[in-house]
Image (cartoon, rainbow, N blue to C red; front, top):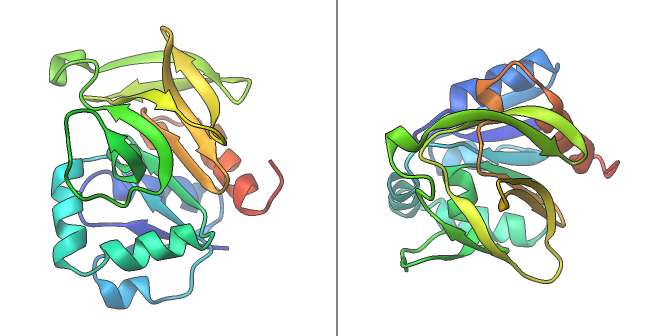
Length: 189
């Protein structure tokens, strides 16, 4: 298995380290030539969603990534990745990948002071969760399955081959969420 990790900005190194720990090959996508390599899935890391969206457009990556996801390429978006994948973001109309049928509230817990750690259920398993200026999912539409809630707010969901988390599993030592993604790619969950 070979996973592309969007490496324009954000926590891409930590995702690659997690994949390496699980024995999975990965490579960084920084330009269109990188994207054209063979891959089984894509991870879109946390970071600044507006910066990442702008760079995706400038580097001519936005449309090829959107098309690949629409054609079934498995994708996992964390925090900013969740925002980039959402079809709707409250009070925002910037162009994004916009392939997942969810609505998102960005910086939902406030700015940096709203960052926190907790433990909660993800797909029926308790995992540590790190939230940094995190969004949450304010609305899911048909076909979207909620995988996790914290304080009554949706923080993880899945639609077909798209997985999103408002938290950063790559910033903990727990590998369960990444293992779930790998099982999803293989059609085992």
